[in-house]
Image 1: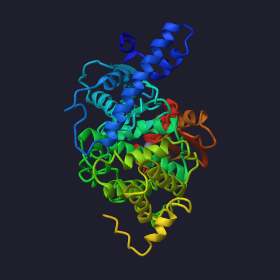
Image 2: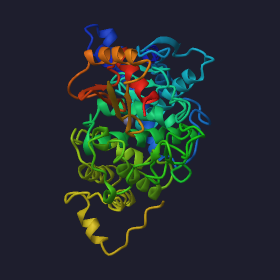
Image 3: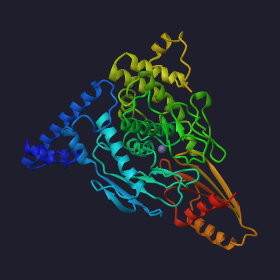
Image 4: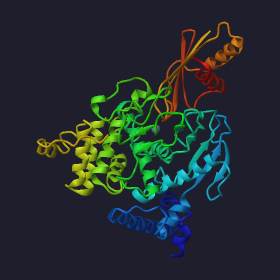
Length: 382
Length: 88
Ligand SMILES: [Zn+2]
């Protein structure tokens, strides 16, 4: 039992795996014990999450942290760097795990955002950081000058300050932080090619889980959430509420300088372009809207069923790196059926894809679609 | 010298274009040396880039090179920033 406590929280699971195969019998024993305890706690947390009725809770409030949670918190390792307006990464370390907040708010927002993202993945999906092996989370703020962007460089997140006229600081929106880290999760799992429809799916995964990070942190159910990406990122000189809307793609902004939100909500308005890797940030509106439709049809907390289904597809090993919308859609129907059986989850997923005009394939749900062909699909909410 | 910058991709996914014609400008020589330095290390064809990273297409007097974040030299960064800020 003591050995468990020693290992718990200090040694990440992948290291335990390694230790469990250690030549030293005592070390291997202790590591195997720790792994068993870890798996036990994870299992308990999983059933707690799956079985709990929808309840808006602020993470960390209400329930005392259990052993698994304490383990998880100690595995969380964040480091925030300051590029000091240059291009160097990761920059000067300004806040490491466990250190107090600093006076520079972008640093604290990045630090907190990494924590919220880590927590959603752990609590809702039992995922231990972006690689599921406790990977340290690094972010750099104040990248370059007046830089209107945030990106994932394959190893860490990078945030610009914005120009101050159109864009504010890119750490302002929690969903943007969740979006960038999700690029890391995708890289470690389905590794969707970043162009065309697979690229738009890659983008959509980041918007979906970015939005879920925010919803989970705020304790918002699908009905209360704003479903906006980058809310607060546009300055008050811009006509717009956010950069994207999953609820109503194409309506996030309409401005003289920035132009109009180009996102389509359905396949009828799919945008063919060579810019933006084939419109990966544009056509992502279609799978984004499908997720919104499925999540709101199911109600409750979006991370619990709709989020779980999408996560199962992202991490399930069946999603091809060059997947198109239709093959992804078919896999969500299959994942819904595998996890929840024949019921409202599969139906919500099939209806969602039907409304955005993406076929779910002959294998998946065709019988259900045929059976329902006489009914009129509800008009998408705008 | 005619310098055009087209920036695509990025978190927002919006395309931005700007150009500068240095003829008759008092700072023409500074533009020329910055452009020459930026292009000296530029790639002729598009690089893969990173998720949400910007792509830049820079054309100087008909010669086009591509850059992608975060792989820009300081000169390349200054050039694209300057053209997008000061260009029309
Ligand atoms: Zn992205």
